[in-house]
Length: 312
Image (cartoon, rainbow, N blue to C red; front, side):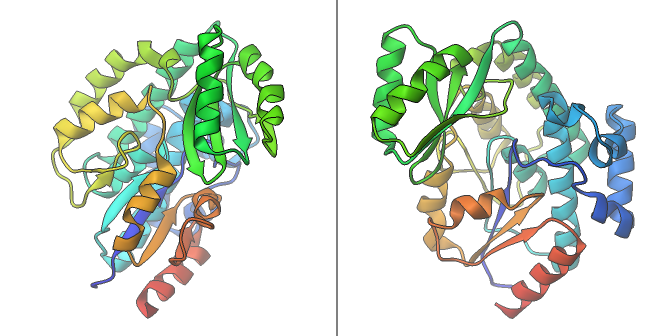
C-alpha cells in the first residue's frame, strides 16, 4: 500500500489493569507473546496485567507491561496488513516499543531492557522524594522560565514532557514541585497538579542510570531498521544502532519533544495508528493534527482499524 502511516506508541501512565486481556483471550499470537515474555523475563504477565495488584504501578513492571501490550497490538496489525510505517514514534517508554515495531529490538529483549530501565530509574530515585506534575494552559517559554528561575533559587525542577499545546509535565523533588503549584497558578496556569509518579523522568536526577542502560542497549540493539524512528530528544529521524545508542541514553535525562515531533512530520503522513491501551496519544494529537488517528487496543479496534486503513 502507498499510504503513509505513522506508528505511535504510548508511555508510562497509559497502563490499566486488564489491558491486553482481550488479545490474550482471542489470539494465539498474543497468548504466545505473553507466555514467552513471562518465561523470558521471570515476570508473571498474566497476573500483572489481568489481576488486581500493586506491581503494575511500579515503574520496573509498568514499563515492560506497556511495551508488551503495544508490541502485541502492533504485531497483530502488521501480520494482517504487512504495512511498513513511514516512521515510528513513541512517547518516552514508547520509543522502545517503536524500535520493536521497526525491527531494531527483538520484543523479548525489549521487555528485559525496559524492565531494567525501570529498575535503574527507581534506583536513581531511591531515598529521594521525587515526582512529576502537569502544567496546563501556559506557553512553553513561561514554564521554562519559571523552572529555570526556581532552579537558580535552589529548587530541583525541570520541564520534561512537551505533550501538547499548553500541556507540559515537570519533574523533580516533590517538595519543590509542590512549591511550584502556587507560582504556576500565579502565572495563570489553568491547572498545576502532581501526578501519581514515584520517579522523576527525563531530568538530571536519573544520571546514574545512564551507564548501565547504555551497556544493555549495546548488547540488544540491532542495526536493522525497517523504517526510521523519531527521537524524543531531537524530534528528528534516526535509523541506525549507533544513533539509537546515543539518543536512548540521552533520553533518560532529556525532555520528551513529543508535540514538536508531531508538528515537524505531520505534513508527511496520511494517518496515525496508536498501538496500546488508552488512546492517550490520540488525546494529545486532537488539537495538533487533522489527520485520521486510529487506536489498536483490542481485537475489535484492530479489525476496525484494518478496515479503515483499507478504505483510505
